[in-house]
Image (cartoon, rainbow, N blue to C red; front, side, top):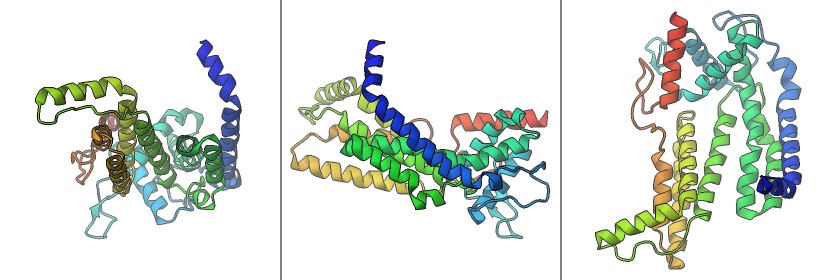
Length: 321
């Protein structure tokens, strides 16, 4: 308890500044488009009306996928409107529309129709996640360059024209949602490397007992690093389930990993720990997009997390009843 009070006394100014930056970011992303974005029509998703999206064709296709899931309780797989009249597979991963769908159902009692709750979540998610990204941006900047750099980075992101363009609450796209987890991935992986012990763990790679002893010692003495690597892997999993171009994140991590190995050789350091943390991160412990498991009636190079699959089935069952 005393340690918590001491930490708060030492960091309350930074916390207050970050809250103010978050408030500024949310204001810029919601206030100026509120009247346009959140005057929600009293209609269902299958009604004939024109949604007020500014994200281009991607936003309107997300709306179509969201409407299909809202009505059927399943993810949109084979879409007859793509490559019409032949049809084609929906190439977009399922997490982003299902996030809007599930959260929208939770807050639906606050609206006149369930679809209004879903649409409100769908529109607000861009502004909300665009604003929330200031927190992992601060954490990443602080870990890499210090507290002042983290605050400046968070403030610049909050006012960045490019980020504002893709995180307005009329954007209705997954860019801001994905960027939040991309920055979180980089922060968690950096923390994993920073908290890792750098000593030599295996004395002789030709002796099995030496290898087993070294691995056990590493996992025992670097639990914090392993936890951060698991969080980085979970973030990669979320990105893969929300963005078709998630492999770019893996490529960035691979380049970072190669640079760490290169510098480790120059410093004559044992790189076994770096290998372990990198492997944990890209193994994505919670779910793997390469498993080939999709929602019912869907086939593509990807999968859903168990929690998303069960939620989809529950939603489908409740609607059928």
